[in-house]
Amino acid sequence: MEPVRTCIGCRSRAPRSSLLRVVARESELVVDETATLPGRGAWLHPTAACFQDAQRRHAFGRALRVTRSLDAKQLENRLNWLMDN
Image 1 (cartoon, rainbow, N blue to C red):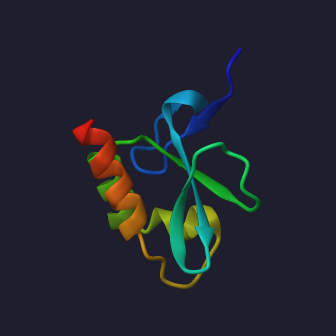
Image 2 (cartoon, one colour):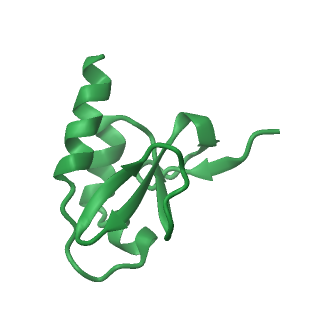
């Protein structure tokens, strides 16, 4: 049975393979392709809607337990690339 995680955008549960793991590196959100980067991770559906919901609700900071502002530009570019392909 595949592990189940909760998307921080829409708050629905989904298999781990259908979500992206995101970690905080320095002050930037980074996609963890292999789900092996150290540190706390947050899971997100690879859709613009879930990303926007997570941004609006300030879910990244809470899920990753960071108080500083996080730059989501790399993550946003990655999601745009995934949706285009």
